[in-house]
Picture 1: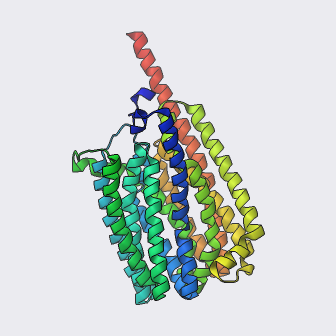
Picture 2 (picture 1 turned 60 degrees about the vertical axis):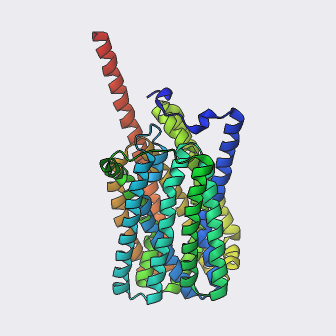
Picture 3 (picture 1 turned 90 degrees about the horizontal axis):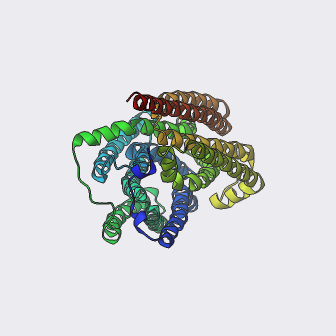
Length: 447
């Protein structure tokens, strides 16, 4: 495919100076939005540790992990596919309709799982309700994501990231104010959920009137919607299983230990988000341009950029490990108003595991861009089984230390497997394209 085959965006209509300004804004606002998204649970947990007790913090930790697991159903792995759909194979209306279906599925599945856990693990009524409301809270994020993807497809990531940042700031403020007034997690979370839903509705109308985005479109057929869901199924399954792999230690702690242990594991696991957050700052804004390089046949440049991104992730991980070793425990003690000196080794293990997670995510992104998604489901399914077995056995044997080693083991194995799969996919796809080109040349010669 040549560059001229790629659909032009709104950005192409602007001057070079305006394009540079928008691109700089995209990096800046994407960094702010990504930081707020990654630190959302940290900020909320910091507030809870000061107005409630450690057991409430533990309930929040597993509820947040659970809601983020089911958030993958809501998003359905569609963001990367939507942004890399540079030829507008699917209209926004089709993406929007599919997102409504996936968000409903998210809520149904999460409520079913919570009901099962309440019966089998003996959740209290408050813990059950907190987990349900948290899933509704995250379903709003899932629905917003389809709009952000539409903005990014038009090369206006700055608009989407800015809207996310503003909404999340106000949602956190609402949570903090109500938590300080009531010292009640359920009430605070419910208030923040209602607020963020209203805010999202207002901001969607604002962006449509201010920027004329998403671009006007129509729903061609319901068949296209389900075709889109089928295309995204492998990426969704990969994202869901990947998140389960990272959360498996928390589920093992939930089943085998108490809410206090869950809180302590959540405290030392927080720096993992720093590694993945900083890595996402680097590669998320590059999805569209990487797709253009692949579709334009610039194989060498495409591979070199991915290798450079992997190198940056390795550097970020090394810096984070050093920071965790030098100041990690004192900082966490201050943030969470607790004492974690006994968990330094576990902290370092988890941070290194976070680096492996970032590499795995990068490789999954590459596999999506080259449309080699068929390998994702079987590989992630096997790794999810490994995560389940390792987490349960290691947590039962070593408690929080075992949970940390389980996380490290699974992420290290995943990083190796998916990096290899990515390069195998490149080789196979490139061979297919080259063979097709040779056949075309032979046909021309015969003519």
